[in-house]
Length: 543
Image (cartoon, rainbow, N blue to C red; front, side):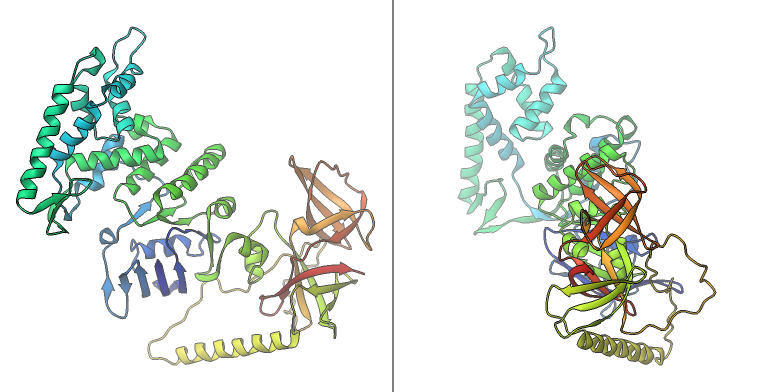
């Protein structure tokens, strides 16, 4: 669990993060999205302390890693988290193996005491007791002339028996490819392992399955660095996960972009972080490779069981990879929910406009609620329509609650402004301007903003809910059509407005054709124009 409470970050007068609070559950994939300059990367860097927050509290697991009020600021290397940079940040003068293992060589902490010699002896004895399996593996590593390829054989033994390269070299030294009888060697190794076990038991100790030493039922620990055996096993394990075991001796310049990305991921996974942070890790890859790497990241998440926190500009990545979408604008958290919830039930106009491709249709409306709960509307230059909420709605009560919240927020800002030393400067604080697709518009840049009332509403209609039908009161003219295989994106000209639709199937449309238009489903959105908040979901019928 990652708990983030009231996180702020300032750079001078710029208030980049404004009181972000959210909880990230274990094993979730959280994608942070938003416009350029919205604070996505800053938010990510504050969580893993590559940037120090101005104020707030961050808890990772059961450890408070940052608390401005209590003066807690745990260094990034003590947090057991991994960070995957956008440009991979591989050392060009190091091999793939050296890049992955670099971070492990500097680890020095309280670790279990392990009898590695006995563990290796026991494992070799186990493998040599069935020499046919080894012989079979080695037979697959001969070249066309029948000569054993030692490098290929080494990698094959490592992956087949899940052993380190050091153990694999010892195994290769028995020359089982020549049909040598190793029963005596296996027996000797087994005797050594058993003698070590008895000697330890004589002193009141014991081994676990990994040959970690226990005394009086408690694990024995020691402050030490990881051994070469441990480092190699770790490197080989993460290499198998990301499928780069054959590239260990290569340098980054000898790898493709996708292969370099896999190396960067392996290096990040090697210390076994509980949380993996990624800042647009696929942005430097071509479209085909990006798609392939999405599948790899999805598989990686399942295999590692880690929590992923992922910054991306690509909405497709966010919608396909994420279990939770974290949408930020101007440093403010706009919505934090599952992808389909964000898409189908956005909390405000900004979220609705930002999420989705093709973009949502926004249609200005004026209307009022009727006694039966429906809302009669004037839309698209005089078209009469009826919006029926999916759930019970008291529009007057909704407006009253909106006004109460606005008054409370204004009072809070006033109280803060009166605090000694308090300064509040906005960043790009203009209200969200939703797009009304009118073909011909007058220049109203010098006109005063209209006074909004509770009758001023906005309809949000996703393109897939615009339906071309044979009979409907609303008529439109095809303005443009772009087939994309299984579907077509169309532009329809209706009373001076352009509406976007997505039509599934192989239908062909001709520019200038007249068609009847209807709006299907119960996911049409009704927004309050004054606050921008979503009021309700429902159906829309034109009269």
